[in-house]
Figure 1 (cartoon, rainbow, N blue to C red):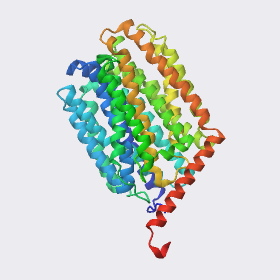
Figure 2 (tube, rainbow, N blue to C red):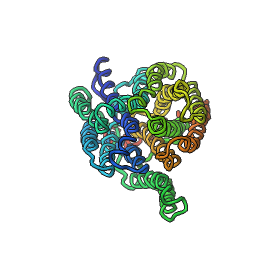
Figure 3 (tube, rainbow, N blue to C red):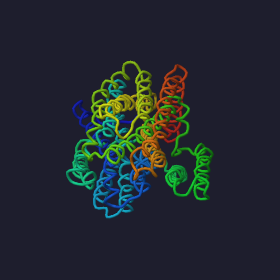
Figure 4 (cartoon, rainbow, N blue to C red):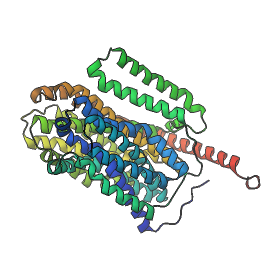
Length: 489
């Protein structure tokens, strides 16, 4: 059964796209904007390095753990309704973050912020996908929407630097409140309600297993420096994560409407898109976490100056993202994926040579490589994740893709913080020597994107996407026949 939406004029569709883009900008920007405030948060709230990691990861971990639930819930109860609730929760969490008197309060408020964020990013993507039904127009809209994620990540440190230097670290959270308030009003006025043609049922067991897997793995990585990898606590957490994965593989295929629709992974492009999203944001999350501390703690820059040093990244995202979206629509995702992965690998390799006294032009030139990467990676990944999928699966498919991004960011911060954590307060060459492990990881992730990008765009891979889409269409037709009145079968 197709999903029916009211007719929207081209101007109204563009307005809906703008509202959705604004929501994803504040949600994704909060991943990167807080990085620039970490040194000041450490001093003001007397936070440890693991406290700083949790300040970032409490947000991205909740996003990763509940994005799929938010997407399927929106498909069932209404995307605009869930979108509005998400905006309100995100605004409240932002307000509480700005009022935090200690790091534990801040971490808890970040988690509340992320609960709202789970209802914004994937749901906004589903709204965009259903608002633009024509394939070519839909591809362009998704390209614009996908590029907003990269732009927000890149511009977050710049805006954050200005706010931190001008008003203190609290301002990086308070700025969200008026933006969210305006978005709530505009959503009520201009965004039409939409639902999937066939509602998916709630899966509490699947949701619990997913949170256990992500939470246990990230907690083990972050706290491994304090407890040690061979401690019973860390080994127990890793065992819980492994058992959770096995539980998902055994339980989810038996459900009619699983939270994690494992049949989506029969599409090689979809599976590859999730893997590349994880690689890409793991690399960029590690880059931001290490770079903002390198610029401020090692080189002694102010927050604003450090943010401005990341201007080349933001400028290239602005310049390349629209071009990349058009290139994906015209020639497919292979070339942008190879270019993005190559730029990330080169950026990681070049960063191995960074030292405390490296000339600033050399540092900025290296950051250009990360700008090329971020400006070319999001549109092809986003388009690949949803291409060929029926619209009834839009919420689930896009939320899984977003979960891959957030999981990547979470792991990037957790791993890089574990590597460089003991050397942050010492600064200098000790920090840079430890950072070599991070840059080596980033280099490998870039090469991984190149390899998976080439694999996922071959003829056999594309054929698997066609077969997966046909399978879901058949499932939907069967469900419609079972639920239709007898006289209409």
